[in-house]
Image (cartoon, rainbow over all chains, first blue to last red; front, side, top):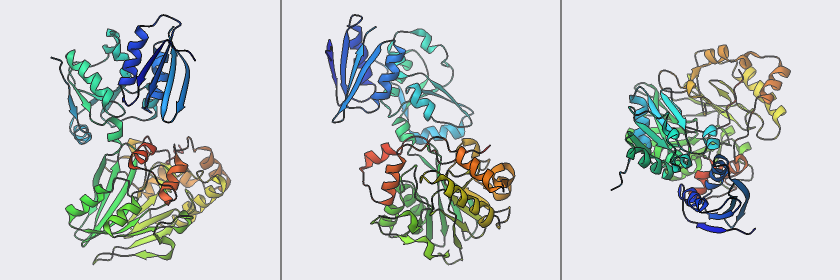
Length: 75
Length: 378
């Protein structure tokens, strides 16, 4: 999946992955995609909840080698 | 310069819950995690606003927050609550952030003395966040610990304070919802570790089979510990009758009901042995025996003396299932009321049996969250 912006939040713990995600989303146009990588397990539930509340779309969550990759489309 | 909000430790929060008329908790985890598990107390008022809602400049987020009461902000590990507390502090709220969050809260054990005379002292350790209970019986320089949790220093420190040596450690059964500290506590103190051997198949850990003992005595006085096999929750569940006055019932009989029989995949058969336990083995015990379980399902079960426990008479009166003598009805009710399975229970069972090994961090994460072993049959 082609992302318009890629954010590295690996090694950061809550709340930083979401704080970084929010900042990145502010710079995007509707329809554009952000990719964020996190090693914080707690960020999985938080992302799902945050995306719902901000009316964006969580396209996909991948996990490989303890890295979670979130793809969020701006509405 | 930016204001930094103060923090509050789990011990200080617990003290505040005991002292103050009311405690206001703002839980900033996501709503899903919050609905699953939160800090509760009879005087706790709790509100959930996820931390990411505070990232927007949206004043409506603040509309229900009190200006005149201290707000304790809570999250999973203490990072997000600090951020939210700082934001609130800047806006003029009286606020503190709970250090280590729910992860820390899950490690709080509160000792409460249930009974004491010149020879015997019985203490209940309440792990508030999980509704897990464990016990220490102290007599004449020795101590027995039943169903210890992972944080074994709690028992070691308490024994030190009491100036006694932990000589016996027992698990009523192989726990499925939390990691036992039994084997480690016994190793560290040189105590004997007892558990029913039916629970330990495939284990290479040292243990003394409970079924070999009908009595375990310690101290100069005769503290009688009667191991009573009470299968039902798991096939090797055991209860301990202390001085014929206190029934440490494990996960078999709770203040608010009975244990769940389904975790071994043979719910029906186990429900039937639970029936035998209730109507044959426990039936002979008098109404004034105090039942002290390993779990509770609701903070309402903490009584006015600050501990979880009720007399057999009260439990028989208030739980219909304890009077349901029709075996078919009994089985049906017990099997149908089991609810959600404890998370990670298969791995936790493996760890407690000694067939699976994990790091401290993994252990902490595996058993975090509420307990789901107690079942309400109301």
